[in-house]
Amino acid sequence: LAKTTQPISMDSYEGQEVNITCSHNNIATNDYITWYQQFPSQGPRFIIQGYKTKVTNEVASLFIPADRKSSTLSLPRVSLSDTAVYYCLVGDMGSNYQLIWGAGTKLIIKP
Amino acid sequence: NAGVTQTPKFQVLKTGQSMTLQCAQDMNHNSMYWYRQDPGMGLRLIYYSASEGTTDKGEVPNGYNVSRLNKREFSLRLESAAPSQTSVYFCASSEITSGHYNEQFFGPGTRLTVL
Image (cartoon, rainbow over all chains, first blue to last red; front, side, top):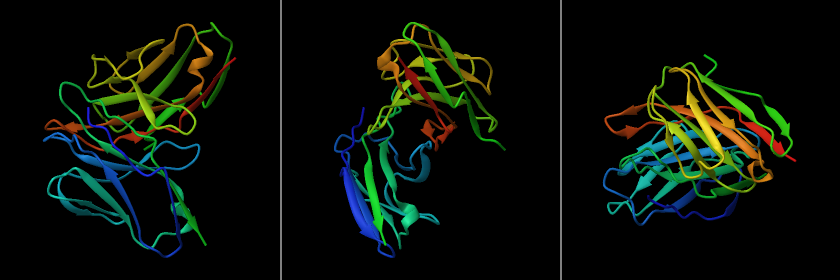
């Protein structure tokens, strides 16, 4: 099962671009990389998913280098409402559908 | 669409009591999951159901049982609650296409305290 490593916490300011990097050295060939956002007292919410290179949607971009051993979630022009915990998951389908959730990155946006 | 719903939202049990957490989804997803989340931690998978009629153990299945009642509903049962099971429990559902898992949709959680 692929394990991930993320910074425990990060601070930034409103209007800045925030990049959160996740390390996943033992990613398998078929694994996808997925990021979730979680606010206090709520379930996680999907942000973005990718396999390689760059993926962009209306809220974020995901950069994955050619070796796929890391990935970077980019949040453009953050606001106070982006303060949350962000989780990087690497899917290991194998013979089951288990996903290992790390402790996540607590992002605090300051005014 | 309500998405994923869970009942109850809060529950307090005494050690040794039993209870069932209910989960339902209206997105016609094949796969459903039960997670627990302890303070300051990520989610840990308890059980999952890849499709109706199948269930499998996750990372931390001890002390729990599940039932996939139909495609919509997936329940989690604690037969004899222990203080170590104090946690927030999340149910989720997703679709799997061509061996690739899609995004999981989560319910609002059940906050369980075992005294």
